[in-house]
Length: 105
Image (cartoon, rainbow, N blue to C red; front, side, top):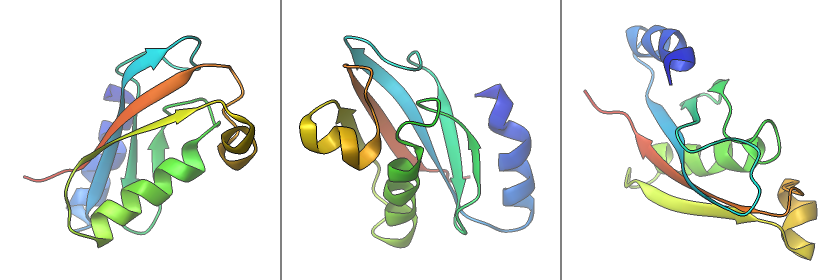
């Protein structure tokens, strides 16, 4: 999380809304450990990583949906299946659970 704080501070100082995604659980093999975090600004800038690049595009979409929707946090998961492997690229064989929430302060 510390690696994304400078970007979050910069975005917030500019008045931009921010959502943060955190790995909260892994089933089987996963690319990043629980606690890994990624921040997304309202205009789609990204800091950090929750999967080493496998699902970041899908996470950006989820984060922007939260920022532009009702603002409610949500738990999402990405795992390997024939459809998901091609859709989001998570091919490590495991399932990652992410908690995505808007930052408020």
